[in-house]
Amino acid sequence: MTTTPPPPFTLPRPVGAVLSRLPAYPGSVLLVTAINLALARHLPDDVTALLHGKRLSIRVRDARVAFDFIWRGQRFAPSAPHAQPDLTISANAQDFVLLAQRRQDPDTLFFNRRLVMEGDTELGLMVKNALDAIELPVLDPRHWAPRAVLSRWAPGLAERLPPFPPFFSGDRP
Image (cartoon, rainbow, N blue to C red; front, top):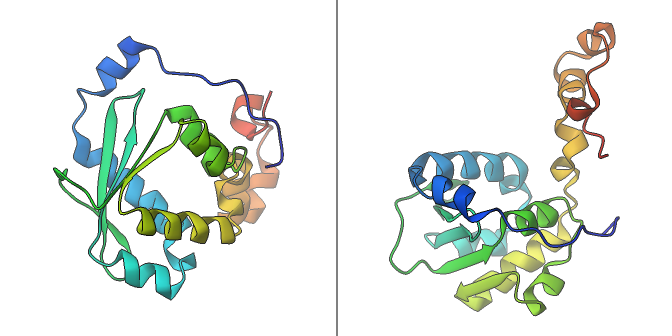
């Protein structure tokens, strides 16, 4: 953890009510695309063997949305919601963002009951330990700022553009 996490924040109930009306499958497609780009190739063989065919669900409590997916050998694939997934991980949106940015420790969130794992706890602990062991700079928001992406894909173009507003630069206020 590189910085002090902000105080806990919960999405307002009306926002969660609106988000809960969105269809689940497109969100699962977006999530597994991001997970596959960022994580899939980094997962150790023992973790992928344990994940094979397992039904997983990420539940964002305050947004009242769920993302369901399954490991299909080399990558995650979206799936229809399951009545009883093998592993469900639940937290508020802010806590998931803080975890992805490595600004909050999952054990701290777990012991403060802000992160909940239900189902196959052995699978959950193995996934957690594998993620802790992977160095993931791609989850740093500065890595995905427009200028950073452009400099990776079109190095000469990024230097010729005028400065982006601070919001788009990836810098935190």
